Image 1: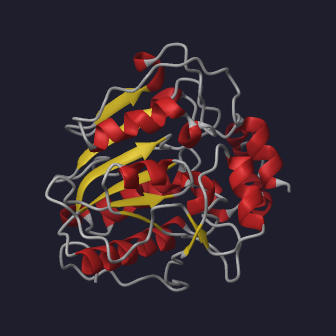
Image 2: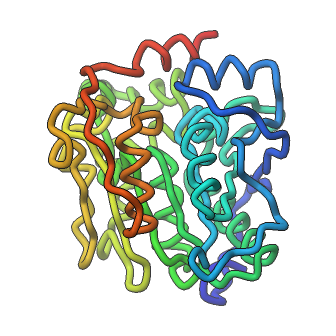
Length: 307
């Protein structure tokens, strides 16, 4: 039972989400986080998954973090989560979309992952006594959380949805998607070398068309996207923005022109981290604009993915 009391039976193949419990240290980039996780299984970001956390009057909604494709809660949120916890939020992070005994997640069917998000939200609400959460999703995390909100009846349980580098209308993945689509059977082959979830998030895929059919937002939650004009995976850049009523679309370079952070560095960028805090708490200090070079974070992601 998910969302507003409407039954949404989990599809065949559903497995409960994994909730990491071994708390790890703060990291500065994806590579450092991946190296630590390689030697520390079941690791969670500092400040997360304390199911005894009691939301305060100033922070009534727990924050639930959803990682990206072929990643984990720790790999994507080892820096952001501790900052949110230090700011007084109850913070929770799951590992979704993994195969049995997986050490990397966000690779399996997006719809199954969205059901896992819903189950985790219910677990957080039951433990904390809160009536709503705020959802923060990075990359695929934005897709699966929005699918839960929009298609599985989760909207009444969500105060605010935030998508970091959200593939709201799908991505072209370094320009590969149009090329692969031009080859008969190309997407099936592409799924074998990437993942089911990666292919499902391609521009024009059945899942993305379904997610946005009838409008890309639903009444209730506030929707915010934070995206970069130089995102490597989501092009055209306009595919990040939501078009529904009331959606706020923040372009990183409109707030800090000298910050050329793209897709992969988004969750480790100091300005984005501070900006996220102001979205969750408008009284927080304004983020400090700092120069960031184009391509920052890409080598670390490549090395982490092949280590």
